Picture (cartoon, rainbow, N blue to C red):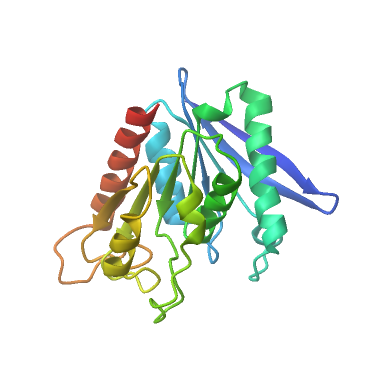
Length: 223
């Protein structure tokens, strides 16, 4: 396994860091974006990045510009979307893979912007969403779901049963309206970050391992 660090120019004023884990042989690429509050070195993103790469999948993680600068407020939607585009273009340029070999993924906000790309262009192998932010806390009656209805790529969602940003009863009903039907993997007792209640006799690492295993199996099935 080879590790590469690449700086990617997003705008004239913004460069970002990215880390690439490159197996000796691979046929699929996974790009994973961080959530709004933590950068690419967060425990969850790092666990996915490293765990999935061990299964002969080239795996790339990156920072959005605001995280690269160390600020808390996310960039404008245009810049977040443009960052995704530039990262994908760089992966294609440096590896020679086709877009249909690339899986987009992200934690919460990072995944949301992957769906924004996918709803505009049917070009990728699939999308994995780790904690999709369906609605604002306490506002499950106002789901932000319309983008998902126009995506034609396969989708895999990981959701915790205690996720305050995604009421499962609402989400499961909405997923029935999508074709092709997405795959939903539920983490029992998990919140938006997949943290479990203390009374659940299970380690944090076992949750990470489960999410990696299901992600890898799904990627290999769709490749």
